[in-house]
Length: 296
Image (cartoon, rainbow, N blue to C red; front, top):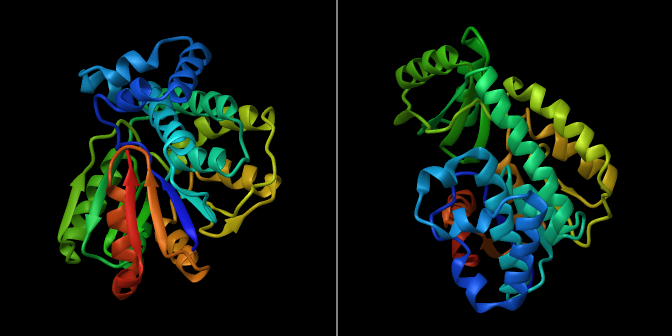
């Protein structure tokens, strides 16, 4: 039986995340306290509290989601994965699960990534928008035809693409996409243009941190966002991990490849249930053969 473990990204956080397993598992409590020390502040106090706004700050959200996902993977997962994948930020959790990164190293990289992305958002304002009801090619073509910087950032599932770029360019593309028949073209509540060329300064900062971090061969294939294909070699994994900061998340392709490679049991590990819904949409008629469950 082939289990695919999938890990969510930014936006899946919720107040109180991780508190239950912290209180019930000594191993989880130890990992979370190590994270507090590594980060230099008590991120668990924010995670377990009820201040949703504090949790939404990029410098908090990203390490919080990684921490929650990795702790659940280590302490609550019912099966070893035959393959792993993560959506955007979730790729770091997948790499820990596959043995490519040590927990503390992944936490440090995500902290660098979050801080660098936050600075990008403050320096170069950007926007993202969810586009529903159009095929991938139509969305891509309209982005190409729109003046300014705007690109498809997340190919989440058939009929659901997120675009990203300069504020005016995203707004103009949304109008054109509505005219082309989009059922919805709605701005997202994010502070910047993630997975677009506007994140280039953050990519350069992350590159130095990745270069100084040990990467090992994966215990199982990692289906990476930048290519949608499985990788096990540490050098290629490193290159793809860096590339995903400024290139689209090919989630549809990643899940398609997992299905082709025999995945029939998907476990979403981390806050939220969004990825289970995306897998079901991507699987289409094959969904009757698939089991979906979540650990949060």
